[in-house]
Image: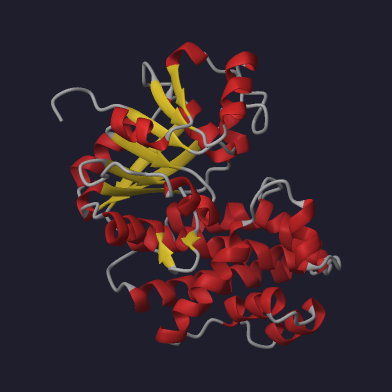
Length: 331
């Protein structure tokens, strides 16, 4: 790319809004795709996203909005996807333009349902995007704290380290620090799995288990995550780094974690369906649990925490009974 690459955000939720805020600290302007034109119209009129992080004010003259995904692909070199994973295929349904020469950045911390693919793999397999043109953003970084400009850390993973460094510069600013790595699979799968573990942490919180047990649960979850990543994609990785452990911790403990909130409701006696209806945003851990569980049917990694979460969510096992059984397998 000789010219400065044009960046686009794909998605209209809280994480997409936070990413736009981060980017506009460095970019003169960005493209931004949202599926619903009425959301765009309200955004332009109000100067903020009316549904998510509405306290964040934007200079809308620096944003080129569109509800046409083909238009945003045409006008952009770098596409940052920040939609809930269950809705990704819905957004791409009308896509007619090729993505093969674009840089695809996934900020989606979930797996594509039905296909049971991580998002990077989905773009590689279904849209022919070269692996060196696919990057993943991860790390302990809640959208709500970004909106408050609280110091946050992001890791950009790409098999092409030069591209990773280029992307990192676009995200680095006064309140976001960045690092790069090449563990695309491990970073992305860990981002999916930490939602499952945050969900079961919430269930335990709802059942009145305390901080002592919570610490043991998350320590075991980290080992479970390590076993799965090493079985499915063996390579050298330090699971203690912030992109893995840090993201797991913040999602499991933070008041901003919707997966923890979702789990807490179930622990307090809500049914899965009722908890979903009460949540205003998607809890990715619900979908990720099923996908990882089904992938693991092939690899047979020992994963008692994941299995317990699956049994509660999909087999309707009593949380009280399931967690009591789980306590005997932790150490």
